[in-house]
Image (cartoon, rainbow over all chains, first blue to last red; front, side, top):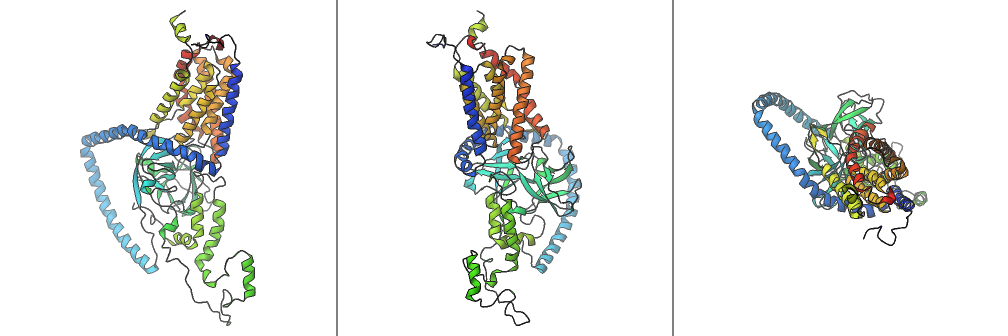
Length: 393
Length: 175
């Protein structure tokens, strides 16, 4: 039965007003979601569940849709390889000659490096485990740059894990469900990545803005940039290991320094996810446990330069009032601990104010944990530059 | 009565004028999200529900479209992993603007209506630009907002117009 044939057919319903009322209610709900999105509790409990469900459904669908694209690209590659085999063979032979010379230099440098490390007693970071994944769906608009990868918590992936292509850094994991994970690309407006400029060892923050080449912000004035400078992750903040390849500095059309990402050299369909959460996983916790060191002596006969060898009970009271559970022991004041305390203080303001899982350089978990383990945080400062903590590039 | 009039005079079934276009939009969004590069360049990402927001407001004022747009916006938030609530606000903003100017837009020819559509799109994406800039503490690249969102969504107007012509005369009370 149509509306006009019904009992309300002759009534001119003020639908404009009812539609406006419905619109206002919907806008209020949307605005509440927008404002509520800043609260970590709501996002982690209510909205994260919806995200996981949609991602779990979207991943297999995306995988099905992405398969023909991958097959087409492989087919075109094979056809191209067949027709250009002769010219490619010539090019590869020339590259092989160059690579052999580079290999000899690499071997000599590697041996020299090993000798220096042995002399200096430098401890290198152990290799990190990684899992391989395929990205099956992407959001490429300037408001959001993310991808879905077809591995999840079942393969050990956790939030904060760095994601790399065969050429360089792609982004990091910001959401994980059982079999799917969400990758926040370096180009997303909410992505912030601490990087270093290889030529000057200067630091900067790589800020995404939806463009293919993200901006370099907070560049130290003492380290001026040049087009062509290589950019690596700095490891600051503990989100990424130090030394992952990021890209090359270019001057943007807007006059800003930007980074042409290495990962753009080829489609980032196949990626590696480093199972790296923070620097504490790179060190042996037992080896870092406090040890009873001998008390330092001074020339004046004062038993210690740190404090009295046998502190009087009266001296311990202020410390206890100040909140210390036990009186300070001299052995705790190792140089590493002294260095790490300012880092612990500095790490707190870095934690994002709105506790968003995507925002800023480090998730709250990643920024806090290295600070809580002072010697673990001090360790990377001693580590040599380069991809020591990264994958075997 | 002409054949067109006879077809258009049928009662509006919410599943036809709301449900079916919603499903088409969701399917198109999922399809476009397939990671494809052509000559190394990413394909644009049209916001399909913006075409619906325009068409539904022109067709008739109704209680259901705002909630349908709210659902579509939540889907975009979750599927694209954008800031929570961003796309519902953008879609409802576009719908509210068209509803407000509905009497001016109705009855215009194809090109004039396309112009209105472009203006509403610009306002809605401008709102999205501001909200994203506030959420991320950095402004998205405006050139890529135009290239990736605005222009491809602008090209969707023929589909929005087709939806309007299908349903705008369904009930004479809304002319």
